[in-house]
Image (tube, rainbow, N blue to C red; front, side):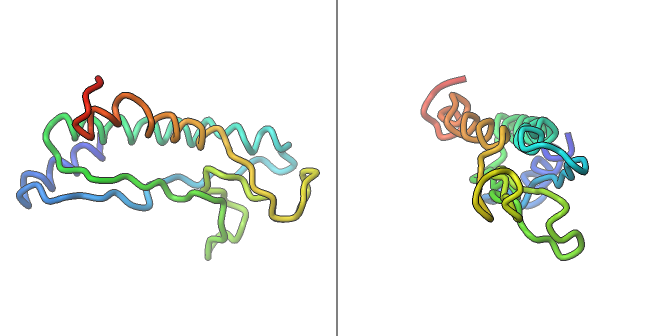
Length: 133
């Protein structure tokens, strides 16, 4: 509920300016020795996104002027404090070619499918004023 509460605070305190939510994401570290399927099935990230996006939708229904939501990060990346151990992306990057592909091969995770389906779903039409739920 923190996202909704923050957005309604900004609405009320600052006259409902346009808001773009950037770099909202979660870092997950797969267990040592995890297989590729475990890297790609990132249910924790899907749960995180689902909760935050539900609160953004709730804020929209309360009249908050949210114009965009950008998940952090699209790709697994290098983080200054964790290097490549922590995974933030919706796209898995095979840093060492250890999963039978070429070095640095990219593969979509389940969170990418969730995010795409969410952004293309009926609520996106409703938020854009095009009908829907």
